[in-house]
Length: 181
Image 1 (cartoon, rainbow, N blue to C red):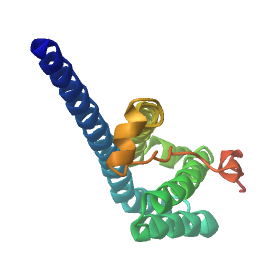
Image 2 (image 1 turned 180 degrees about the vertical axis):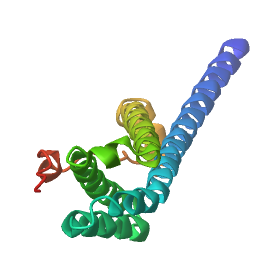
Image 3 (image 1 turned 180 degrees about the horizontal axis):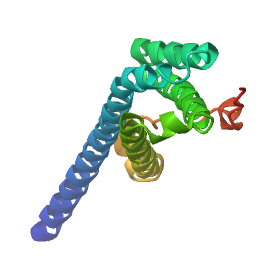
C-alpha cells in the first residue's frame, strides 16, 4: 500500500517536472526563433546602403524610389519591438522590390556584378527570414497548444505564462507592390 502511494507521488512529481520544463523549453525556443529573425533582418538592413549606392550610379533620376528605400531603411534601423521590426521589414521588402523592378529598365545595372551579388545575397536572406518566421510561428503554435490545453494550462497558469503572438502580416501589407517609372 505504501509503495503504491509513493509511486503515485513520484508519478505526479515527474508529470509536474515534465510540464514545467516543457513550457520553459518552448518559451526559450520562441525567444531563440525571434533572435534568428532579428539576425536576418539586421543582415538585410546592412546590405541596403550598398545596394542603394550601386543603383544610384545607374538610375540617378529615380529619386523617389531611392527615397523610399532610404526611408524604409531608416525605419528598420529605428524599430525596437518585434512588432515594429516586422512592420519596418515589410516596408523595406516592398522598397527593395521596387529597386529590383527598376533594374529591369537598366540593362547595365542588371549586368553589374555588385548589383547581382547584392541581389543574390538579399534573396538568400529573404528566404532565411521566411523560414525563420515559419519556424517562429510553428514554435508559438506548439507553445500555445501546451499552455491552453489540460494539464499544461494548469502549470502555465501557476507559472503566470500565457499564449504568445504569431508573426502576422497586416492585410494592407499583403497587397502587391506598385512600382511606378
